[in-house]
Amino acid sequence: MSVRAVAAVDLGATSGRVMIGRIGDGKLDLELVSRFPNGPVERADGLHWDFGALYEHVVAGLTEAVRREPRIESIGMDSWAVDYGVLKDGELLAEPFHYRDERSARGVDEVHAIAPFSELYQRNGLQFLPFNTLYQYRVDERLAEADTALLIPDLIAFLLTGVAVAERTNASTTGLLGVESGDWDDELADRLSIPSRILPPLVDPGTTIGRLRPELVATIGKELPVLAVGSHDTASAVVAAPLSSPRSAYISCGTWGLVGVELAQPVLTDAARTANFTHELGVDGRYRFLHNVTGLWLLSETVRAWEAEDGARIDLPELLAAASEVTGEVPVFDANDSSLSAPGDMPGRIAALLGDRAPSSRPAFARSIVESIAAAFADAVQTAADLSGRELDSIHLVGGGSLNRLLCQATADRTGLPVLAGPVEATALGNVLVQARALGAAPATLEELRAVVAATHAPTRFDPR
Ligand code: LFR
Image (cartoon, rainbow, N blue to C red; front, side, top):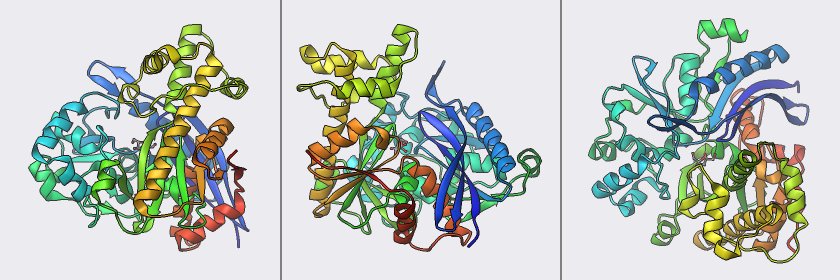
């Protein structure tokens, strides 16, 4: 079997990257082509994404990828969920808002006055997150003039190809997709005065969205198709989480920690709703039954504040090494406390939660953050087991957090389960695998795709102590 290559664009909330994925001859690997920072930017009307810069990075990264690897056969895109751009006649009307912008709070009140959360849960199966797209749409005045709204990966695919679609896994995070039908819930949209004309045709991962526009063929250097992948980053990450059995839970840990299990059928019970467990649609019609835990956001925002205070960069591995030397108990706070979701003075807000228990040294403070994230992971793992009726025997922790040994060990200790850490780039690997499968270069089932990951990316094991 010869080696086949694809380009994967993976945009996270704190950084984006373009990768070359190669598969064949028993190998699956990634080559990092470019990596660029991302994050909320404050504008006069609230928090946004610097979408113009992101798009430029994407095109530059793809250009460099094709230069390095002329065998690239396709492009796939994934990003964080829920956020979108609105378009009219193919033109973006405004810079996309960031999901941490506070404007959606009003949307929550308005939506729930029309369709209470209990009803929404039966319809869309989503946990309550104040930024779910339907709340954002409800208060978005630009929708009145728009003819379509596209989630971030779909928006980039549109700019690359001229074809507007909604990839289904990410569309499920809007709150406007029927949890069982997997189709747009036009009736709900209508009740919420969200014009259904803005909801594009749905496509599944593996579909060809379109081909690069001629101008971009000239820039990027090759005439390539853009394929839909699990364009919600978490959907791609779970494709490449080498779950060996239904008794494995996963934690996809980056800015967020997404903690749960994969299901074939939804669990739309009162208990699941009360525990705020979501059903996001996965690749191949699976459900990601999970809960959002505030993940490394707590650490990255804390470091950002300290760096601003010092006027100097902080070396994260060094800080974590010092944190692991801390002996004795550190206090734990509720990582999911809503006061921690907006950008800003994170150390101050965490200290406010801890009161006089707040550690005074930075290593102890960082340790407290890591332990608090692990404690929230342990809670969510237990709840996932209880609600799904599964006895869990292992946790696959994938994504950036898998490099954080302190976090992996704390998660093993607090759950009493072995943590199998890695791959760190699960999201990009899932993106690559779904493209490769569509090209006939990877096996057909999710289980077989995960076996490829397991065979090529040995995890690091952390046993509970
Ligand atoms: C992770 C993620 C989560 C989603 C959050 C906001 O990057 O996609 O799954 O809840 O970001 O979009």
